[in-house]
Image (cartoon, rainbow, N blue to C red; front, top):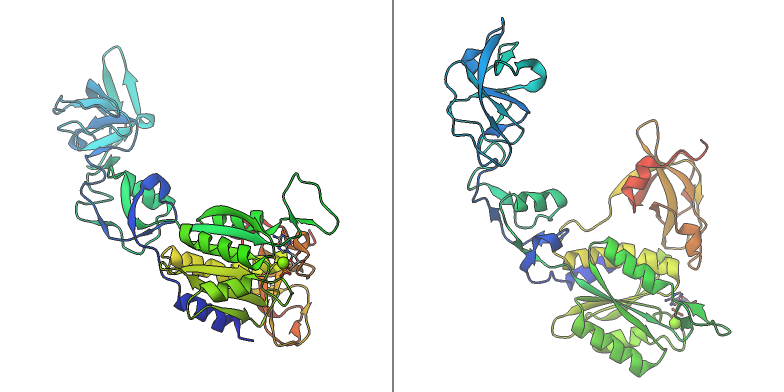
Length: 416
Ligand code: AMP
Ligand code: MG
């Protein structure tokens, strides 16, 4: 039996990031930039108005008001070539280029327009540069737009788009194969024979993979046969960038996944017994020339979920080139006792985390534990990490892995 840290270190020592390639920016969300991207265009590209109003010469205005002749109108997307001379103004819309001669804009709300004389009265003094967005305010030519190693977030994709870029050199989203094992598994729509169950893990793992920003590949289910398990895992490793299997890694007579991973994997391939509950058994190895990591996750759904969170997800994110690959982990006050027995394992307990009026995180409730009780934990937004010992009393501080941060902030206190 090894600790969670030892298991994670063993896995991460053999998982390498994928090779970079050109990725279209609309597919690049969550990918890691493989090079610095340098600006070739200034943003804004030209001086323009930040208001609907009038472009004018600041020197023409005064605190006693000034009447200016309206000589032109300029809309966003067009230009005005009429130079503004002393005593003149041009009607201008947000985003339109500043006409020649203008050095400021007054907003339309602060002026009165007389259409019959085609004049505008500017009521107050306007200083040079007012409501003008200057060329290069945000980005100058040569600036680093995105650095190598940075994650391509929504806003960074917007920044790349602002330069007219359609592709970016990045580590691609890993294709993660998901394979179930077990004679008892029955597809949705098929009748349940005596002793049979539905396949829960495959749809759940595919959703977890997608939620982690990767592309799941449905590899179906294999029966508990040595040869079929071996063939399924080796073909998965040939077509995917990483593989998740479930079931077949404990002490049963037909637990062939751990055998197959041991046979197919390199020298680091092994069955792991991890001091964690749930999620003690697991197999891991890197298969084939491409050293595709294969995670043999345990079969009970809550164990599958916890093993994915603690052991597979960080390694998959590393495969995607991420340097920060762990869930946000925060200290939280246990509002309820989280008692446990000493058994040499770290307990992973699904909990409801909320933000208290004291500005601290609070565990409002602990979910029922049991590796087969998926519904009981399904709506929990966090997992409390309870080290070996007697557990936490109410009021103690506990470390909590946040699964859904948005949900933490909006969650109401347990008792109203
Ligand atoms: P195993 O390690 O293969 O013996 O599986 C442990 C438990 O998890 C058994 O009760 C299996 O029926 C159950 N199990 C395995 N795979 C799945 C799955 N894909 N969906 C739901 N339950 C599963
Ligand atoms: Mg099985």
